[in-house]
Image 1 (tube, helix red, strand yellow):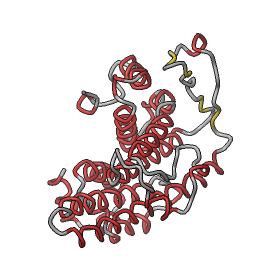
Image 2 (cartoon, one colour; image 1 turned 180 degrees about the vertical axis):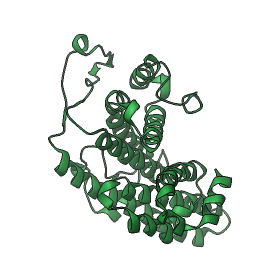
Image 3 (cartoon, one colour; image 1 turned 135 degrees about the vertical axis):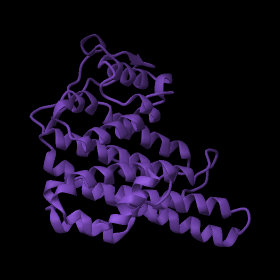
Image 4 (cartoon, helix red, strand yellow; image 1 turned 30 degrees about the horizontal axis):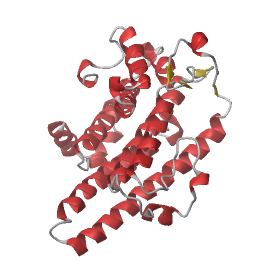
Amino acid sequence: MIGLEKLVELRGPSSRRASPYENILRGVRCLLIIASLEMATPSIFSRQVWRDQPRATCPEEKHPNRYIFDLLANCAVIACERNIAMSRRPQVEKDSQLDHNETIHRAIDLLTKLTAWRTRWDQENRNLYLGVSASCAESGLPQNNGSLIPKILHFESVPVATITTFMLYNAALIHVLKILASFRSPKSDSIDPLATMLDISPAQITMSTLQATTAKSSDYTAAMHSTAMEIRPCVPSHFSKREHLSSEALTIGQLAVKLAWETLGRRTSTEGRWLDGVLRTAGGQIVARGMWTD
């Protein structure tokens, strides 16, 4: 991926104006940003000049994922800053703490932007999906410590692009929450500085636990679990239409499913085993073998 990014960089952002390359480079953008997240290194798409160019050639409404990809590119930058701040902490405590706090603020800014995006999405799509409750016998899903795993959400007449965008949003949220979780000690019982910065109470936590307001890293883990549970019901609807999916949509689906599966505990949890079973029942056509391993 590093070599591919260098080739794209040599062409320069102006090359994105050429329509024959637009779709290819948009797909490359997706891959490079995901790779930068895995490596915790900034990509060229974290630079403003590379972000501005697509907007000059293509209306925003045609590519609603662009905004979330911009946030993901920022997330890779913050992950890199987090690693640097933590590596410096033992040697340069004072400067490291300043870096530490600045990185937390930047992560919270991403969390705030994702929360605002979700609010708008819910307003625009509140009638697009329907949750159906059912007993274990009706749904075919097992109980986990007495709690019912919800039946699959049935997305009725929803464009596959909408489902893909929703999965991308939740994948981005998991990445941000992972960064915030890394700043907290699992054994910490003190007041969380993040709660003070966000200035909200635990009672205000909504749907995917979008606002991480408590002290323990386990709370951020719980928020990631809740977010992964929103990805899980999208899988059947999204990949049942895989013949009509673009390469970018397939890549987004793979990213979201991989994150959800890992967050849900892979095969160690009921939810993870259910997701594993759904994908394997599909005959291995959904997720590339290299992304679906222990």
